[in-house]
Every structure is written in structure tokens, then in C-alpha cells.
Length: 212
Image (cartoon, rainbow, N blue to C red; front, side):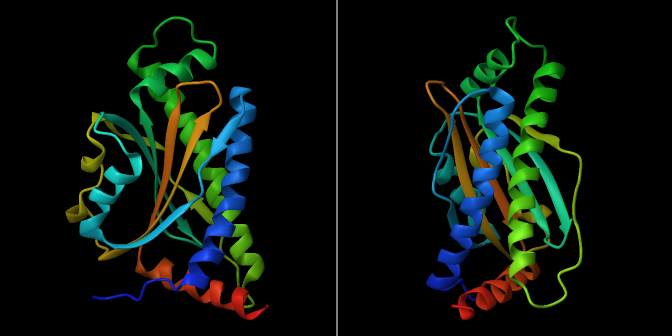
């Protein structure tokens, strides 16, 4: 199965929508941690699913092992969100949350899942509300999330996704990284959306572009 890539206008529109939503997610994280959050410009790629693992490795930009949490979403949009933490950042995060002593595995997992839940909920919620506001078609349908879960601990980033376990052939990959000012913390929020969601987003973006 082949799927047309987003054209430059569609990509620019989605990047702007994502940027606004990521700003909301960054503000939520800043409130939680009482720290200034820096955000990268969203990176958007249309990929065959077999290319996703390599792309994630390039986006994360390190050979170091990472820990990741996942949260699926469905309803108005459909896909998977993954929050990737570098190991130094996990320890930094614990310190910022007031944990002076080294956390046990259960406490660290709970902390990472809490942060992932905040980032994913704020970002996907922001994207959905903007898309629903643009669309002239029936925009009903809430966005529902699974409970966040730890998908991998201390693994190479390219091993996070196994394409054989997904029924998609292509994915829209959206990535933003978060850093904390004066802190050794980096986190990547990656969203993967399948063909059905890609075409839905494409239609809404075309409406948005045509309105100018």
C-alpha cells in the first residue's frame, strides 16, 4: 500500500498546530517541575513502518540506552504516543520532584508515567481541539487514552518499535523534544498515527489552507 506524503503547505500547517499544542504540554510540565521548559521545533515525517525504528534512533540522537513510556489514543484521532527518557534525565527528574534518595524501580516508574501522561494528554488534546475547530464536517468524537505504561527500560532507541506488531504500513511521525533550563534532562515526545488518521488530518489541513 502506498500513501501520498503531506505537501509543503499541509506540513507547515500541521507543524504550526503541533507547535501550539506542544506549548501547552510544555507549560504543564513547567508547572509540575517549577522549571523553564525549552521545546524544539516539531519534526514531521511520513514513513513506511519499516523505517520508523531507524528514524526514532536519529531523532533521539544518541547511542545511549533509553527508557520509554507509551500511551495509545483513539476516537477523533488514532495512534500511539511514546515518551522517551534518557537515563541521566530520569535521575534529574527524581531530584526535581523532591526525591533526595535514589528511587526504587516502582517509584521511578510511577514518576515517569505521571510525566508522560501530562505531556501526552496536553499535546494530543491541544492538537485535537485545533483540528476540530478547523473542520466544517461533523467533528464529534472525543479523544480517549489508554493508561500510560512502561514499554521499555534501558534499551537502544531503535528497538522501541517492532513493525511486525503493528497492522499499519505507514505512519505519520511527529516528534518534539523537551529540555529543562540548566538541567541535564531531555525527553522526546513521539506520536505515531496510521493511514486512516493521516487522511483525516490531511482533509482538515486542506480546509484550513483553503480558508486563506
